[in-house]
Amino acid sequence: MPMDDVDRRILALLQEDAALSVAEIGGRVGLSSTPCWRRIQNLEKQGIIRKRVALLDRRAVEVPLTVFVMIRTSQHNDEWLETFAKGVADIPEVLEFYRMSGTVDYLLRIVVPSVEAYDAVYKRLISIADLAEVSSSFAMEEIKYTTALPLTYAG
Amino acid sequence: MPMDDVDRRILALLQEDAALSVAEIGGRVGLSSTPCWRRIQNLEKQGIIRKRVALLDRRAVEVPLTVFVMIRTSQHNDEWLETFAKGVADIPEVLEFYRMSGTVDYLLRIVVPSVEAYDAVYKRLISIADLAEVSSSFAMEEIKYTTALPLTYAG
DNA sequence: CTTGAAAGAGCCAGAGC
DNA sequence: GCTCTGGCTCTTTCAAG
Image 1 (tube, helix red, strand yellow):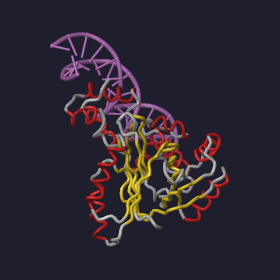
Image 2 (cartoon, rainbow over the protein chains, first blue to last red):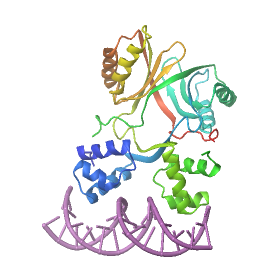
Image 3 (spheres, rainbow over the protein chains, first blue to last red):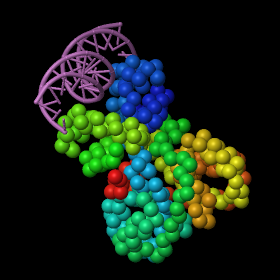
Image 4 (cartoon, chains in turn brown, blue, cyan, orange):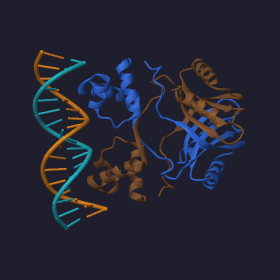
């Protein structure tokens, strides 16, 4: 089932505000409730819509500080990665975790209340597995943050 | 109004699934619908819950590639940043954009369909403002990605 | 905080164009 | 694909304990 322009417009709306009613979305894309509802059901069934979540205010829940951690490792085997990935998955302060190309092997985005709290997470990280080199960069300002993917390429 | 443990549990649930009904959430935190609904209203009014969004599948909308772009600039004045920030805000492929401490001045997370598509975004970036140095790192694997903030520090 | 009730909105499935 | 129609669930507010 390919995606048409109406589907893309529905997705664009839901990416911005998942609390919109089916009727409201239908109205904006030129559909009545039922066909709009069926399209949304399909998008969910196909897994294109993964989930609906609430986004909280970082400052209100006391994690104003964003830190990027770059990691180099000397061990590049699957077993090492599995251990490390499992350990990192359990750290709630780590929001993003990528295996990279280039000189840096792994990149993590971490949110914490303070530099001291970051140090505790750092210690926990290096206790999981052997890391060759760890360097941290602190974000001074979050200029843009969105979860909305570009839909220009879809379909 | 300080946040208590029940509020934290409500937030934890909504961060994972914002489609849960008020009755369902109430049941899980040991509240009936009415007081649970009032708490959620308060959390929204206080801005602790910023918004509810749908998260889409990156591959389904054809942006499987994540690229981190590190930028150094020679110009560190407000005017330059304003120009650059405005330009970047209009690029839908840029999901995150931070001003950093350390040797790198800015860090961007970009999603695109392919390396060729990234090159187009890159050209657009360098056309916005004068950049001293731009380096790109490609993500080979997304090991963890969550929008759920840690609630251990809140309240 | 609770329960219970009640109005309204919204969801979801049917039949039919 | 679409609309229309109805029943049902959920949300949201109220009163009262």
